[in-house]
Image 1 (spheres, rainbow, N blue to C red):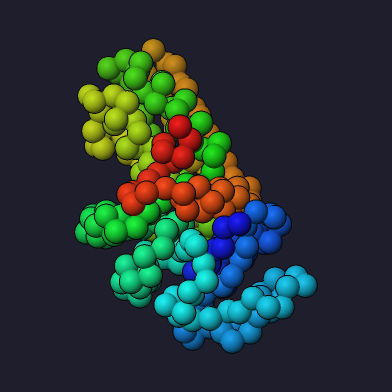
Image 2: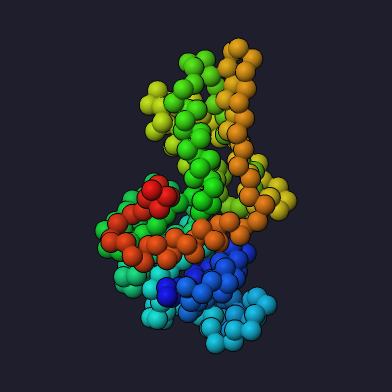
Length: 250
């Protein structure tokens, strides 16, 4: 049984992760942690979601979450670095980072954190997205010199970071697959609107009037939540280090 504390559990993704944990018999939700000024602090999770569970507290302090095996953090990059980072260092428990928008300095600090605890960080927790990436890498290796590549990403109008972490994952994967490519060769176009959960397109077009377009679309946060919970069970068993989807999907 893997005991999980969800940090940022009062948000949309956090609630979906909570529901996913409660639906599985081999994981247990032990804490929900929200921001200090949240209206839910001091209440139980039935104030967040429709559930019969009444004994799971909503607290505002990571350091109080003693009885958990893994943290899943789905806050945001700013809150993670300014409020949560040092506390994870003190707690010394495996960590799944379910947020994006980190800058280069933040990533270096996360790499340092991974010298102390097992840390899983990815821009997208969808298992099928990993297969999408592998397909893109296959095409990226074989493109002709006259091929233009564009990444177009769509998200809801409340998403704070642009481009998305997922779009940057696609860009990085193409560069690794074809060392002749640079970031300047693969522009990212970000669109924000409505309640779009997430859609990513990669367009390959050449001077012979040929176009290949690949698309990965998420219609619900359920895919992200299921992936994060599965990875929480996996990271509990791993030694100290920094992990991503390539490690998990081996």
